[in-house]
Image (cartoon, rainbow, N blue to C red; front, top):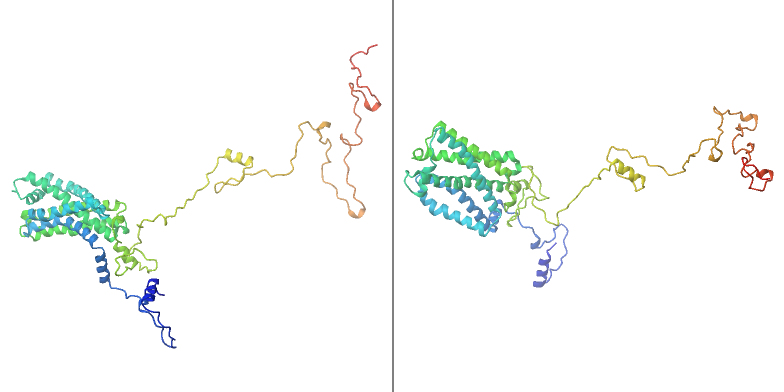
Length: 439
């Protein structure tokens, strides 16, 4: 099927091709526009990605260079490659100012990563120095070379230890500690390491603090011609104490990285672990999707725990509300007034609802009163004899007619006030029996 744009362009420029009869055994002719492009290699995909996102990659690279330069400047000074005051004045400070200006006037998402990494790097260095300075100034197991580094930066004599200590510790916290934190946070965001969990993130931070940070420090002291004279002597105590300090630094940095929220959202591209898991990348477009539904899952790496934010059209909110159980008095009241069924919690039986039908009304007067309407006679107790049907018609026992509704009821006594109507009396003004009649 040809794209509509191709069809319109072909109709304007040239007449449609003449349909030809296909011969049996030959494949039909296919237009050149309909032939799919050949898949590009991984190198071509990387080059296309770099070409499309060159400005953003340069900005991330600037942050990585600024983060690594403070440590590299110390190694370059100890090896005699470049004085530290030159590298600090011509390279480190200008590039740091450029990064700060970009972050203030043209902020991007990765600046959040840089700020979080620098903050946790400074905090981890504080905890590291709490362990190191105890062994330096209280126990006296080894010397403090940070003031000497400060004198290298400002290019003053080693006797000015106070100025050297102030400059050296500012360089240590902001440059060394903050730079290591920025580099580790960018590395975690680029690889998607936090998908593996908090324990894996902390272990990776400890390993990063040991190699290459601690390994580079020991290699600089051991391999430089005047490394031990300029920094500290390599002894079992100094090696063990420096290793312990870097382990503490890596532990604090890893815990801080694991506790940061929304870290992957500030990274502008898909993490590498998600790319390897999905096994796909769009060639020559620079768009690397995190997951493709049709791509086979090779099972490498854990599933992504951080999902990209949804749009307003894709967000679906589902609320499940359970009925609140009513009190017993409220439930009885609702059942009594006929308001309908009431949902009850599981495990509770439905209450008994009165069934409509005939209602038996009991008389409030005592039994035996003629005006109460109740029968005074009851059928005889005991089983009812069943006669043999062959003996003739069945006669049921009739209870004696002794009630007020029977035909043989005894006559009522005459009313002394109204007289006896059944004897033919017509006057209702009979005198009271207790009052003597007038003569």
